Length: 438
Image (cartoon, rainbow, N blue to C red; front, side, top):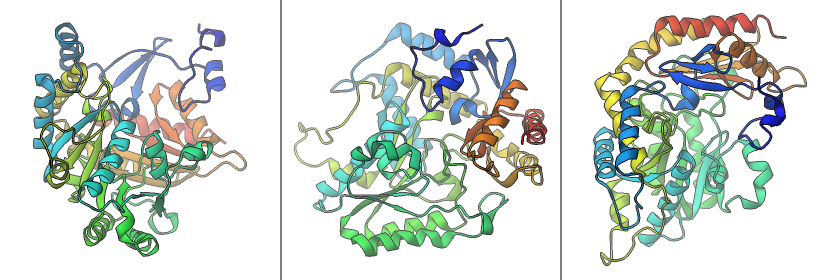
């Protein structure tokens, strides 16, 4: 039995620490679709760890690759050095990425990927002689990690307000796309809302295009509660960026590697970004790793001047770490050999219909689905925001189903190999406890 004073030394992230340490939820092992907790119960994972374990837990091929790599080459710096697997991984990724995203810079996480992408955007304009383009545009309710760059372009208030002194100057935000009056209970892309992309034209009118370097959006906004882009919205953003010479950055940290049924949301929606951030599903959550993919014209702009000069003064100690590279290569092999993206696409309709079956249950005011993603928005409990969703979370966990809540929205993102029985179990467990909470 764990006691609170056994856990005091660990300051947990994005967690009410005192509440957790009074009622801990401790996992001790995992396999496939399930965790095993400290009480010996098998818990169905409805959130793929945290949008990341797309190949399920402890896949034997990925485990073996990590073990072998640890015994062969534990670490080599990425500064003026390399190892074969990281070049192999970059080539594999560029063959998978849409369009001409044909160069990859490796990082240690999604947050690092975002800050890297923002620096690339600023540097790109500078080396091209447009150094006035320093403004970065994000979106309300956007989540782009926890670095100062990410929270500056991010639009989630609680992630920003305590750290206002460190917010980057010259950032602004277009409006979010969530509107219950017009698009509640939409399946896949809501029909209403493409015009909201025109907020970027307002930014141009306010600041002038000559000052704007890039706009960054999540194709599907995840941490804020699963907001699916309206039909035509991303296409409209692309056209406005092209019109004004602004780089378009897609943050695909959560949508990459099969989550939508396609390899990437950019492919799913047929919209080409200039820069794409990746992490999470890159290694199926096994070893921390992130990446930034760029189109050829972005990379080529930096590759000028003497060959002996560093083109981009940026990088991390763990960029391209050998264990991460081995994990990522094995993960990509599993995705291919087991047709996991195809499985996700084949299961998407059943997933959607089953989760939308919760419409009409107590407290449910919206359901949003696409691919193997779902957001179930609950009515806020009077005077206690987030409390109702958290109660459902606790009850589902006690019933051996792991869900995630963000605000008053239940977010579901299971491993890609989920089957119909497991989808049904998740939906029925949520329905059971929606009926019981106040």
